[in-house]
Image (cartoon, rainbow, N blue to C red; front, side, top):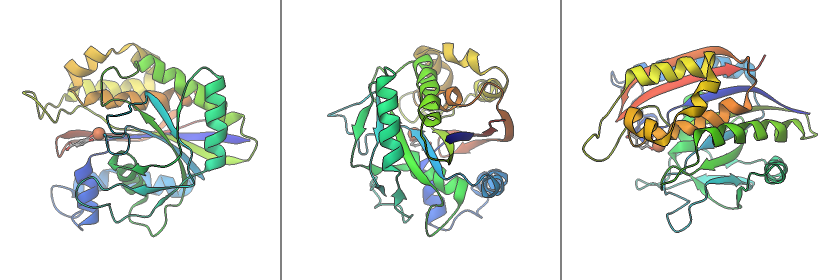
Length: 279
Ligand code: DHB
Ligand code: FE
């Protein structure tokens, strides 16, 4: 049977990808960020997942504003890094797991989550930057990926509570996949950031720290955070944190913290990162 062994959350700033791709990781601005993920890369070598269910938000890259699915799942064999304006990132093509995707899609839809099925798409920084942070520069990604996308680009996104319940349904879907597989669930985006409007540059360390604490010690309490709370406290892009709640809902109640990192800033964003292991 497939098993969810661990969960990872991380911010997914495009400039982090650019720093990696242009050999700038040792520069004073970037070095603390890449150092902050070093323990996670070491942990990952031990954890050796076979599949990552990577929950993120597309940024009107592949899911343009013509069609805005609330929840979508990638069902392809492969996903090409997207061109977000500077050419595609020079990182490997992302291998999918079409069989697991199909199983999860069926399980979720019969479990009342009406996923949009995405059979072809390119993947943006929301997916590739976290892979780079966790695996470094590689010729081939060491995992296969099932992408799950959540709308945060056009109001209204789903509630945090709905995201949590999708995570629980995801856990049921994985547990009913007959093949033995070590599966991790990741949630990417956040933490506090606002890249537009009069409050551009907003960072809220107190909110972020409390959110990280509660992800570990009191995750259920995060389900009640409203869209307005996210907007007010974490800025207009802080809503990306709802992807973390899908991950947390998919993990067991007693998941333990293996690594935590918080750093301000990377570009306009407070970088937050957690590694949680199911025990
Ligand atoms: C930035 C952060 C994001 O999450 C994103 O999607 C785009 C840009 C930034 O801080 O620059
Ligand atoms: Fe983003």
